[in-house]
Length: 130
Image 1 (cartoon, rainbow, N blue to C red):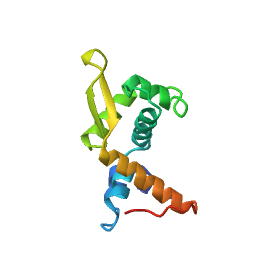
Image 2 (cartoon, helix red, strand yellow):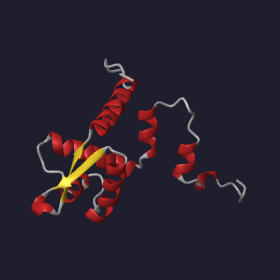
Image 3 (cartoon, rainbow, N blue to C red):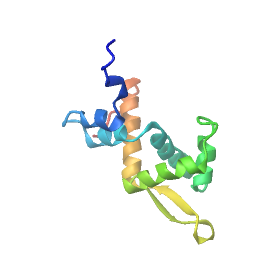
Image 4 (cartoon, helix red, strand yellow):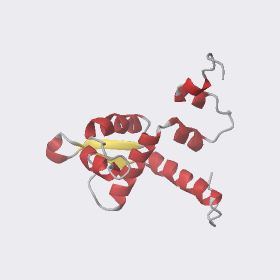
C-alpha cells in the first residue's frame, strides 16, 4: 500500500457527502449521525418506552451496557446535536434546570424507518413505509 493513500483517513462527513442524491432522507439522516448519536437516540426512545425520565445521567446509565465508561459529559454534546436536528427535544426537567429529553415525531419516524429496513433485511414480514 502506498504512503499517500488517504482513503482510510477520510472523515465521516466526506464519506456521507458522497452518498448518491437518490438516497431517501431517512437513510441519509441515519448515516449522518455517529454511532454514538444513534445509540443516544435509541436510548431516549427506550427510556421513554419504559417510563423512565430522560435526563442525560439516565441516558448515560442506559448506554453503560454498550459503553462501560460513558459519562454525561460525553452524552450531552450528542443530545445537543440530536436536538439541533429535531430528532429529540429538551424541556426543563428536575428543579427547572436539568433538561429532560423526549423523542420528536421526526426522531420517531427515523427510528421506525431504520427498524423497517432491518426487518426487510432479516426477512421479517413488515415492508418499509417510505
